Image (cartoon, rainbow over all chains, first blue to last red):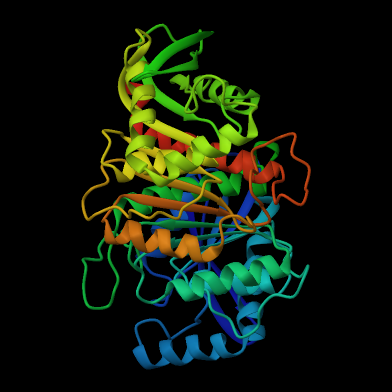
Length: 238
Length: 238
């Protein structure tokens, strides 16, 4: 089951899409599915459906707003503005969490799962101390100008990283590990050998942009995230 | 079901213990369970039972031989000799794999799962090009004087590492990642935040030796290894 879900962040109108598996007729824990740099596209919708099939109420949220997706300059400007102002990014993602919470199909427990840009967004939410049970970054950037303070992160964290992702070098992974340890967060990192950037994008052939689909990394990360969400959200009690 | 399994590496008599879950009456893929630096002890037997309950034929092997376990000096000398001569370590582990293969309960497919010293042993086996479907290191050391050559590693690799393990610093993790990438191995790394060395040892209270039980890391690594073995050994076809 899927339906459009319009919502807003202040004056900015946002157009999400909500997914839930038909086989569940009681409220389910919610997953905010955060798209990558291309905006709310087929990849994000496919991923949202995949997580809905695990038994979650999933909002494929819209971080960009009207008129951005498909416009390269506005997309870059929008991403830069949120990257440089984490508060803005958090407010935008929080609007999605609020919209998700208001769906009658959504029960207790909330997690965020993001890809590329969305992975950074999920981690930024977690660093801000958002009330989340879990935050997952899949081939997302790990660097931050505002590292989490000690005790700030309430969410359990899972990062799924491609070992040969040219956009997220091992130095960033090491710095992230230090950040999470210093913050005393409950965090996990999964590194997938042979995997480049964007390893969940089925239609991405290896190219000069460093992005390539990697089926083992896609399947292994999906399994790991499923296990992680089951622990964080405990849907059996839902 | 468990029974003693005596075997040998040349002149050295070895005393393993074999485990299999009673509910399976057909041959099952084999797991070589490699103990840590203390030798074949309760921890190794408990872990072997745990993996047998997943449906594998498990040999808790004996890497030390008679008269070593409990003798601190001989234990250190035995470990040093195998660490400095990977060929010796490989022969000793291979003797266990052969003994496992000869059990009538063991079907097709072989993996090695090792802890601490045993993790190093599992990786050394894999680096040697041993005929293994999978090799798992749990809080094992990752450094090597003989990095794997390109294409040498046949086994899928999983390393489960505690983020604050003082015996395996992040530099070693980074070097291991580079080694595996250069070898073009099919590898994965799971890092568990907050976990120190020996995080699967239930009776280890935090102390000056850097070893401490960590229940989340224990449970998460067991789940990850279960998923990994299911992919590598495909027991459903057994």
